[in-house]
Amino acid sequence: MKQINFAIIGFGGIARTHALAVYDANLRYALPYQLNLTHVVTRKPMDIPLAGAKNVTDIEAVLADPTIHFIDICTPNDSHLEIVTKAVSYGKSIYCEKPLSSNYPDALEMVKLVQEGNILNAVALMCRFMPAVHLLKKELEKRTIGEVIDFKIRTYHKSYLSEKKKGTWRTLAQDGKGALLDLGVHLIDLVQFTLGDIQKATHNERIYFKDRSQVDEITDSVLMLEDGTMGHLEVSRVFAEREQTDRFEIYGTKGSIKINFLKPYEIEIYRFDQNTTEIKKVDERDEIMQYYIGERGSLGFFQNCHTASLIHFANRIVGHSPFNIAATFEDALKCQRIIDCE
Image 1 (cartoon, one colour):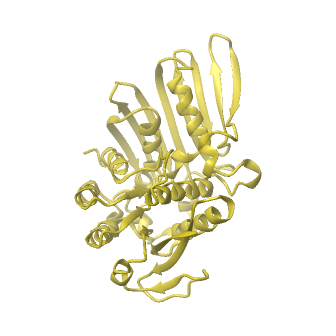
Image 2 (image 1 turned 135 degrees about the vertical axis):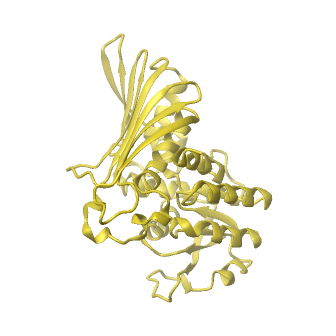
Image 3 (image 1 turned 90 degrees about the horizontal axis):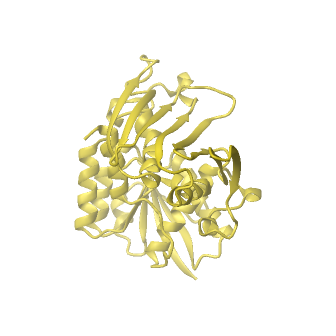
């Protein structure tokens, strides 16, 4: 069986999620190849608890290795441009954790680099692989709820209520922005993936713990699509509740469609003329389920989506991608433009 060799750059929390996605992919799916994590690049030497993965501190040695098919960037946002520049000079394919960069100019330069170098690329905007998103997109294409009047999308996290987050890289100004860049990038991508490109945005950003964070902890945004449709985005890293709030709601002239991310296999459709509500579930035979595990084996939508995203990118490397919705650098740049209001 063909081996797709790759290296993870960085080994923080998200790198471990990517590593788990690799093992999940190899175990669960009849892939025409095996994903093989050969190296983990870190600033300082460390013990890597992954069989067969070698820790190195010299990224150049990894990039120069002709047996490595791609690199997976899992480092802080402000380091992405430098790593991409080096990878392009070696002709390496690149999978990059979101966001593309800490600011729009760097993200634009990264897109130019991969375009000029003809580099295969993708960004881990993995929420687009959620089955519910696929269902929603289909219903919008069928105009089930008529013309779209408005939409609301939100994510509430609570982890930055902890004082332990003070001083971490995501709280620093060099990151560019906080909650909007960290979490909102997924929401902006979902809006553009399902409803169309955003023309402009107005962001109201707030910091509550000013002694802990230099970047926004809460952001409310008004978004306007290119067709004039208005909508609202809300994101927070300091809102605590029993169950995490991640929702996408679309209101139309004939009803509404809603997604609860905690129920990633279904959508709720309300039909105004019939005054009826339907809970529509994804068919296990649907193409989106080819690399997304069913409910009984789920590791949670976050991990499941990362697995699907990496598989779709690997499929492109081997030239086997009949159904591919992986986000590219260009897709991520469109999100960065909205975040930075460029």
